[in-house]
Length: 503
Image (cartoon, rainbow, N blue to C red; front, side):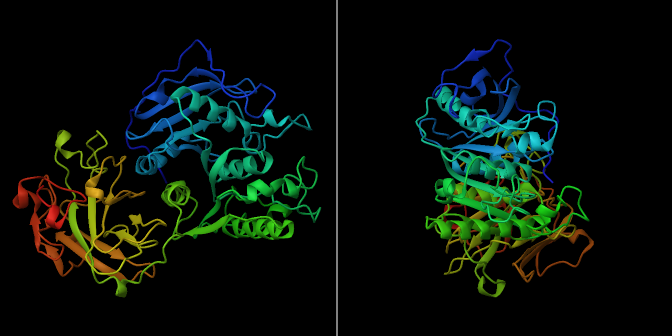
């Protein structure tokens, strides 16, 4: 589960009282009508913030924002993140922020509150009112189109489209937005772990009548040509396998059960149905089905994979390497005790946090790339502190840094940077850090201090790590462990290794 660790929120805007109308986009009858801002100041400030706007249905709503420090307002990606049925939008934007920082994407996470939309269907099925179809400009999905124009206007952007990520109920929202708004300007979308789907089919009235399919809907299969040609990913957790009997959030209607007994099965069925329909229509099909290893029904476990698939999708995710074929992989630096004060802000996000600023540095000192997707980094208490997301292989000589939390910000020597969804939890007195491949075969094991009461590893640092700095292998990845201060006087250097050490 994703949780905010700080009791105080970093908010860069205060909701204004007086509304200001920004005339963005076409006339009011269009799906691209203007949004009425109540406050848009956070869009121009780096970091977390909130904006407020008036929806077409008259509700005053908020959106949570994360703007990366290096965001390019003229052309940087605008990324809409849609929350699940919990409506815990802050949790979602906090999970999205490290991904946004990595790819320079502006996160806009609308909050569709239970006060404004009491039932989940009011949020995910906002196409009808009083038993009648709304005008497309009045669909709740169209608020994304309205917001896109307004955001672009406020930042002076020239973006031609936007990106979408939704998890659970948010995934229902995303795939229906692209289904019922064929002209939506989405450049790419990810629907992760939806509970059930509106199938792009209209053959069987038992199981494909709206909202489960297109029978009775205001659009037909032929209207989905553009959707099928959109880079769209059905993203599923390998462990998202609870059934309606086990989980009250898994819909148990006959129509939903016909799609599969679990979210994993239903996602596969949705993708297969779409692929078959596109083939029947003879139109291009650019969708992808991707499975996130070891992930269950948790947005925090899939969002890094979603970021790769949205913003860095070519080529396809690498095929996981076996531990036996990763002999050059080495753990080269460990920070379990960030120094106090600003000197301990190892992840560069402006906030020293004893857990969030912990990190592990890994180097591929071998001659071949190593694909870590589905590998795990764990300790004595939790074997899966971090599961490596879908992505590219770590090249020969490549460096990867895993931080315990926060929003890692900066270059880090050009290393690939990830954040552990569950935190690293490194124990200063002693622990055993274990890197395992996708079959749980141990690739590397490092220990220190009292080893957390477990058997110590052969690769062992005898002291505790309460040294207000890291231990590292310098000048080369195969060197013995040394306190970082003994190397060059600095406390740590995530991503900077070997010949770069000490610069």
